Image 1 (tube, one colour):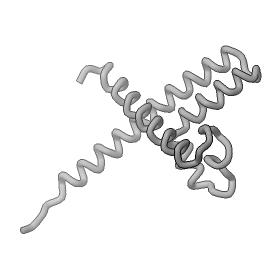
Image 2: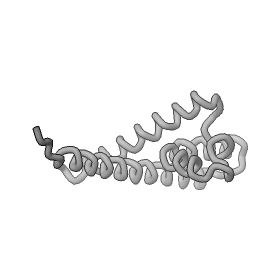
Image 3: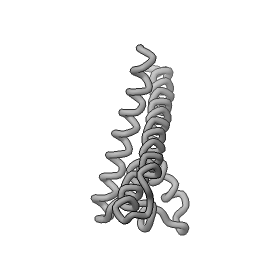
Length: 114
């Protein structure tokens, strides 16, 4: 595979997973996704960690855009958040591809006795 295509594929996988998870969370809770209740809570650490790991780039982008609209951050901070969200989506894609590859290897190596 072309060396450029693999990172692009990983980015697309991470962005898709983030979007699906974030949209599902917004539909279920009925609120905009953000680093706030009900998505992130000190009372539910593991749930918050899972939500942040899966939909974190979506949360970061929503929070950064809201802060920019309110004038709390400047253009450079918004660009920094955008770059961080893109790197996060790439990392999420790499992790998901690795997990899928590992799971496929486990399923493919199982010997079924008849």
